[in-house]
Length: 282
Length: 358
Image (spheres, each protein chain N blue to C red):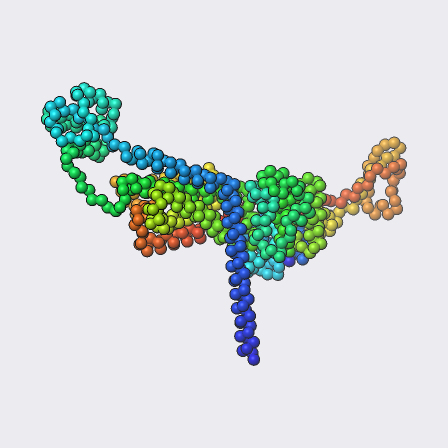
């Protein structure tokens, strides 16, 4: 679906922000693109969505070089959720969606009411102006805007930002449903939980270069120290011990009265990111 | 056989291209209508049309109840002290005073008035010093009132009455100011809202031609300006005269409206907020309107004024109001080329704005 070969970009002389990115995104895959602010994440997404021109290297989407693509056809096939809910504040959710969907062929469109219902949008607010909505509701309308055209390729930038935990779970469920439908998803996020739960593969980008690219599971496994931390009670005292995983084969290798908890010391995706890039995800 | 296959392939390709072009035209038209509808909604929500209608009422009231009455007022009061009645043919517009002291007292309160002391038999002018040109004019006017038998036979050009001439002049000036202000500030007020809401970035990933976004904005403002020009002329010049002069007025309004809307669009994209824009507007308004009005309406002549495009457009509009159509093809060629170049510049700036960081 997406192929970037030696992708470079600079904002004028001496301001190179991308230094030869190489990655592919398969059809129906959820691909996570993780990086701190200023790492080149947004620039890459803008090149992939056809907003920024003048890149170096080769970028293909839908098996066609983006520089050669007929942009109107291209934009008909993609949906973009921006980091912030960009909507006309004076128009209602329905009017916003009617307006944005009017640029797509009618046969391609989903029903506005149905999409909003799926996103659990409060029906009372359907006809009220967006300026009266909470951030979560605006984010729901933005998501509806991205989904309304039934895109084959979906770019999501911080999809769960501004949502309460229930909303975040709902959005993750909808993203999963889109993948099941065969939609390819390019996910840009700071949220490690989203990346871990949703992504088939993730790429860590820093200073305009990809420093690691693999499935979240493999990235964590590669750097696993194979240790287990056990909290237990023995003779009325609470204690904690860390053992090597193979030691568990013969059961708990020390005396105890009661096991309180067992934790693997597997690193998190954020630990991995810091390890690879030397920077946090802020 | 091979040749036949090639021909049929060519026909098929041509058909595909034609079908694609037709469907693209249809979809472009549909997209343009969507943009136009949305722009109208945003302008209605921003009370733009209400403000334009308010300005129209205000201008109309000013012309009918203020300007015309003011222009019909006498220029200066002239007071005559002539104890021996030496001035036998003096006008009824003169006010007689009984003493030199009374004359001095009156002139102390009516400082723009002119006094004539004819006590010696020869009229002497007494006035408060202003500017040389104006003082000469006041003195000439005062002396002319001593010879009311002389009939001035100034040649009358055209069929306009004094009042109609005044109405046309002021309507032209106010229409010019309105378009310069509304075309420029109006586009800015709509676009800054869209910039703040971030929706311009959403348009960067929508399947439509970017030029349609600019086109829809300038078409809305053009239509608004054309309606404004028509109503302004009908209300203040009168319906019978408007019928003859309106087509030429609308042509000049179109040129000015397109230039101002495109300039407003470009500046809005380049500048960060409305404060910066207001400053830019002030500079443009000063450089556009001040030299134009000075050169067109006073005796001041600025050497480079013929090179100021707004002066040419203003003169085109003024001539249109007085029934003289601008027929110089160079003027129209320059106008069309200027608008086309502005459109292209705005398109480049708009593309850059869409690619900006969040």
